[in-house]
Length: 336
Image 1 (cartoon, rainbow, N blue to C red):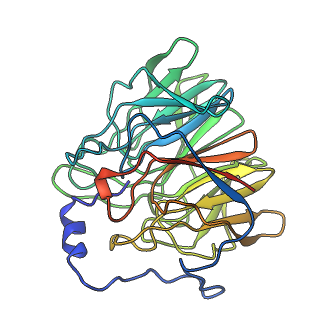
Image 2 (cartoon, rainbow, N blue to C red):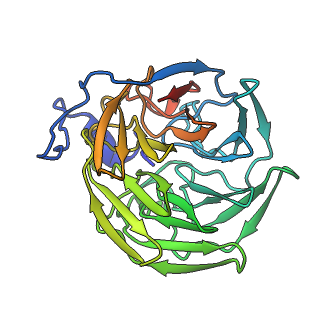
């Protein structure tokens, strides 16, 4: 999703002043907010650490699958890797790789199959072409198959599965010539027909958002410029609504749902002026349209992968502002 080596970002990193994106006027809480309820525990690190642009993840039969991301060797290589974490044994295994290395893909699980859409090639946003390809992983056979590509190539899109349909929203275009533009387009994939359909666009264009589904509604939070905005999509009516903003503006968080509550974790407090990262965790109650602060994540990071297994949110990989592409292999688990 984000690259420290892009020409636009390098110039901005040279600035000596951190410009924070404005938080909501309703609540201007920042990254210094205090820890709240919940507990974090450290878990076994990933075999292959990932920087930012980040990997993505999906959960199948109690196993967290983390796919793609950026190499930690400083070359900015887009990774095709698939790593599987078993929370019961606290162990990782390496699975069959995708045919295409991807930084900042989007993913969702349908009927026990992991679908991975979009991303960007080695070099990152503004220095490589965005990807339209869709690949599907079957954990039973440990194999990948190529599916119909998205109509719109994109990196850093958000995704969610509702009623057996994969919705991919937002993201950014990217080209080797250095150009990119935030997207608000929404496209829906039907695995039964292997076809895509265009849906109502998001109110706000952006990339690097966290996303999750609660009661058939897709929630998207944390847009590319570091925003507190939260938007919700109802596929039944093909409409978007604006929800209560987060307490902390952020770009590139991850998210998960536990007992009907949306947890948004980490990210960067400003983009593209990335000089620090967030450990803050916030919980959204859709019934009351309100946010609450939870326990701080031990390792502040942006663009990690996340997934919920048996009521626990696992956060893997991502990058700190100081490590950038070198990223982290740390895995930490949050229990409300």
